[in-house]
Length: 316
Ligand code: NAD
Image 1: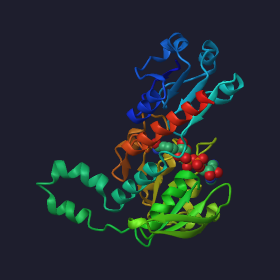
Image 2: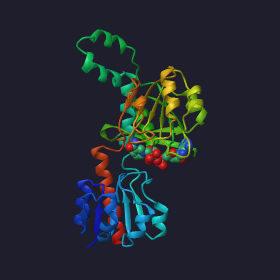
Image 3: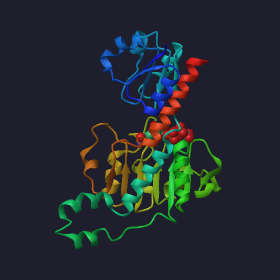
Image 4: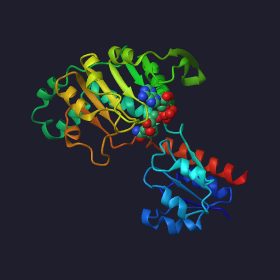
């Protein structure tokens, strides 16, 4: 019987699919320092971002044949090393794209109506300074008709563009690999419409957007720094639901303070899990603690996709 340790948990749908296919699935989390010993009793392991599967650990568990990552980024796994040892490494890259894209708009809708600040102040001053607060938040704007710039036009970037188009926004997208094609928008009743989209230069995105959303991996340096903020429209907003490090945080704080950037929506940070207090306390920043993929629907899709990958691997 094939035994899988789902060390960072797995959605009950995925667990059920595996069990119905005859696998044993344990979902109790084994602490990192006990994993080498525990894994000797398993054929495969699934993780999210918490459990680390580094070279040293991989060397100690030659019985492991499959590593499954529920989600996208595999920074917590020495993927190439594992593969060089004959271990199959799989992930579920597309399952959470819509959840991340919707979080981008949660931050945008928040920022354009000052909800990040209103939600902080109303509990404290809502019954003593109601009219002052009403005045302070009176100059909101709408998203429809505005231009969203999308940097990184992969799975999540395209999903973000699709939501934006559905809201009646204009899209300017940039990717290292140019894209020319169409995005499909689906509506009630099964209707769908194809909207042609073509990537433009990074310069056009930076100078021409009312809102800019980042959807690239982190490479070696930030994509948005002081130079880029200087070229943006005054009053631009910036959303980062990609990876910490893709925005130069001190430059962002400076741009928020001098009014160049009207607001920011941040799901990811340098130094997670201890982001800068200056960002956490900034009245112009809408904040979430890296929850882009954390919806029930995404977890179900991740669990089911992972289960199918595991079943396919061991049954082939
Ligand atoms: P993807 O691989 O489908 O797309 C990334 C795109 O970025 C690719 O098209 C690539 O060509 C492009 N790219 C890479 N470097 C670039 C650069 N310097 N300039 C412009 N484009 C560049 O990945 P995805 O699934 O769309 O994920 C995008 C990001 O979102 C990743 O960093 C991922 O880790 C992150 N993510 C975050 C959460 C969250 O919880 N907030 C959840 C899932 C994914």
